[in-house]
Length: 89
Image (cartoon, rainbow, N blue to C red):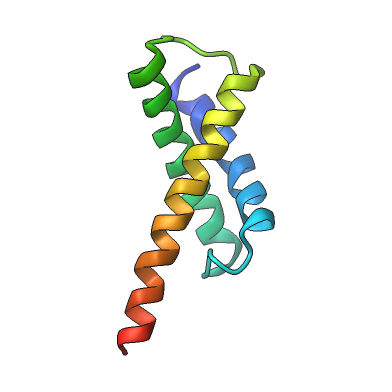
């Protein structure tokens, strides 16, 4: 799956992450969708690094799980960073 495929998958994952972690992802839907795209790309990179699978299909379960995992990781990191900034001010 190419970079554009991971971006499209990331938009879907961003919506899923917003529903799963509604309190951790601040900034509304646009932020969630951007974090989903970044998370899906990170998930694809992790999958390629760990499994050296090369091209993954858009419809494969592995692609979706990696994208969701990447989205949750990025959303968690984003929530931790923005949570610390709000607490400090």
